[in-house]
Amino acid sequence: MPTLTALDYLMQPQKYAPRPVCVLFGDESFLKRQAMLRLREAVLGGGDGDLSFTTFEGRAAALRDVLEELATLAMFGAGKRLVLVEEADDFVTRYRAELEDYVDQPASGGVLVLELKSFASNTKLYKAVAASGLPIDCKAPSGAPLVRWLVQWAKQTHQVQVPQSAAEMLVDLVGPELGLLDQELAKLALISGKDKKLTAEMVTQSVGSWRAKTTWEMLDAAMDGDARAALIQLDRLLAAGEQPVGLLGQISASLRRFAAATRLILQGEATGRRIALRPALEQAGVRSFVLQKAEQQLRRLGRHRGARLYRWLLEADLDLKGATALPPRLVLERLIMRLAAPQEAVGVTS
Image (cartoon, rainbow, N blue to C red; front, top):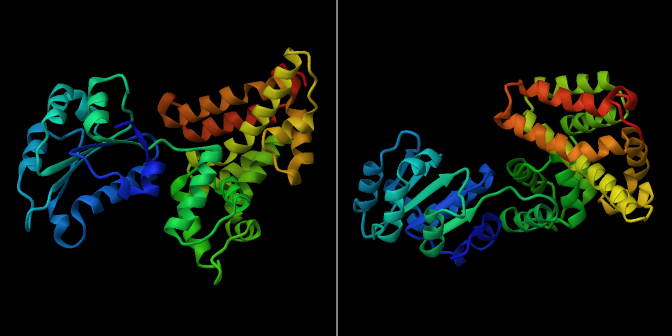
């Protein structure tokens, strides 16, 4: 079957029965956990079914032990066994040929789940799983798909109605971190009242904690050229336990809008059309109530730095995930200094 996204699977798991080999792959751990919970429920049900569930660590697992577990009769009746190999990328590398054979002839009484960071679509194993197994793409959504998921997830899991404006506000405040978004929805559900409806105002009042407020103050200070204030706010956030990857996720949405607006202006000029700054920001998704501030900040940043924002964000994301030996704090400090520096200090003009 074609690759299934985790978002689609979680909305209607009953439509996709577990196959003898299932693969959860991608970079979003929250989606992997939720998809695994649905698979576990579908294969084992409740009660004593947990006795038929075994987990292996991919780096240390031997294929012989995994296959033996899959072939073992399930406890308490004629049910199936469920075997999960966590962080299985190295496991797949070591046993790729054997796993390809297993997909063709799996154990009749077992379900094997491989949890991977990546699963290349041009490999024989991927094609075999796509044909007879259940591959679930757990890549993190962003932009409009993320907002749509949030609205659906709130209704399905937390029994609250969230309009698009409130969902957008929640993403702006929390960032594209699905686990954190789910936690905030759980809290908001408790204050949603008898009608079980949330508003953007409720989100702002309840989720706008000092941490969220400090994150935006940090970004505003950097965009306004106040590097000292931005670094002080960064220090407060890190000291309070905020994760650098999460902080980058929270500010990336705003910076991508600046980058998109800059790209629109430059593309227009390249084709002989002049696009004003405010319409470009509006088209890039900047909210009306912050348009004036955003216009001032992008003017100060300048078109050359605006055009580099996508590259800077990608570089910071990769560096936070291990592409550099720099400590995470320094990765964020470098981004702040790039935003806050005077244009003449970095050789750019507006």
